[in-house]
Image (cartoon, one colour):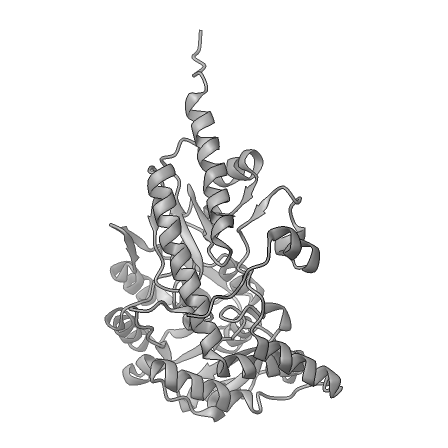
Length: 393
């Protein structure tokens, strides 16, 4: 494994201007938004410099060479045979989801989601002038499951589309093939259009097997699209480029009605960065190894210093979902940790039903940052536990 060197936080804070480094004061450890502290892959940097030096900064009207680049990556990584003609361009994954919803769901339609889930899902459904229908995941031991009985009741009552998070954010769940097959069966039976957000799929851990939803949907006769990007796996979200992949010919015809502006508003630099990213898997594998090592470190640190925290360890991505309901920090531990420990996490409440009392932490940082974050939170918990209890007279 080649180690990706992470600069000290002070250096990163001076060099970078994204929200991870500007939203909070300098004394706050930023472990919230899904950005890596790692430097970009050299191949991506070289590609961006080359394109700028060539003055290649104009408009796009389609995926061009990105389609075969992604198809090659998907085939080699997951055994998914992607027809490049089924690949369409979008500004980012959120835009791809909204535009797919606009094509597949009538105004006022119903879109099912399974919270706790990526918070923007709520906003994206509203942006598409549809209504969110929540069917929460079931907490089962150290994992979470789809409530298929509740999903089928919801589908039977009338659902136009389902937003699948695959792998699931914030938990890092890599859905089993059988789970996706059952979802596809229900979607086909009740004619529910499935939009699968697979942005975290490249970050699947060794020992886990990621299953793309599109071929499962095709086999079941379900209508589906996959929306994805290199943005999370290679830390290039700000370069603004994503793809929407049709699972079948009829859905591909539907995507042919995407407004021209969806591609035109995509960054040409983002497109070339995505092409470079899908070709540099060595960097990706090194990043995953470091994330997996941090996952293990966090588990050990919590066991030693914060044993009341229940850590739902991920099998993909660099997002750690922690149950803080039993540490004594009240109903909103996120805010207490931010205010009094100076560590910025993501509040579990923002992920919808089932998220209260939880928080999400970013693992794509240096081990020392994790150690400092746990030390600060543990010190806060100890102070709270030692504080005298005030009783009513």
